[in-house]
Length: 80
Image (cartoon, rainbow, N blue to C red; front, side):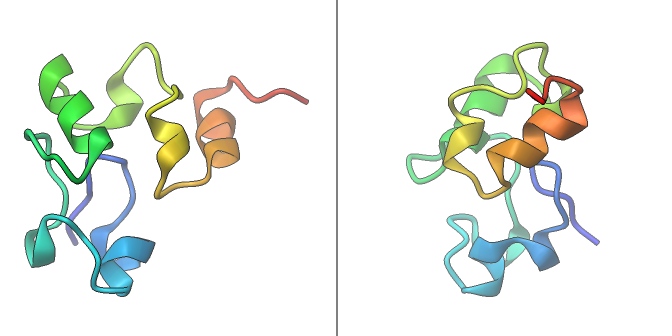
């Protein structure tokens, strides 16, 4: 199982399932990617997963593919 930079299994990612993953079958990894701000952000911050960032969740994660509400929940920063 491959885990994308956003933290979800590539096989379950909506973009991968729809054949719209900007990285193709290899899945997302931290690298410069004009089609994926999440990947580029992780690359620039030298982290492997968004969850490792102290700013997570942020404006970049709002773009998906994971629900921003879920990101808030897993980070413990949800607004109840």
